[in-house]
Image (cartoon, rainbow, N blue to C red; front, side, top):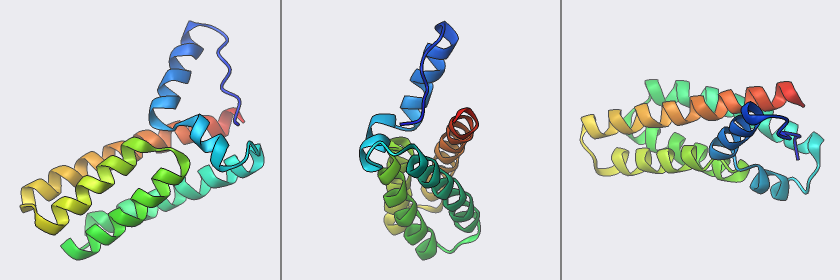
Length: 127
């Protein structure tokens, strides 16, 4: 697992923030505790989230649902539960919600993905 050991109160709070955006225990379990693999998986998710969110912003209603489904699966794989939940809401809104509901869901997904990507950047920098 990537080392996010708390050294002071600031580090404790940062560690808690990391765990909210990325479940580090889940990530370690999925990568068998292999730090190199954790790093690679986080880098892949970061790239994929960036690409998929750009496509979501420009896609048709049907494409948005499919893209969100892909992002949901990837997010679950690394323990990014907020991203997975937000992506699931986009899937539902793309299938049966109004345009306003879909836009709201996409905005929430973008925020969750940005939060996760920020945490990933910090984790990768610290590793």
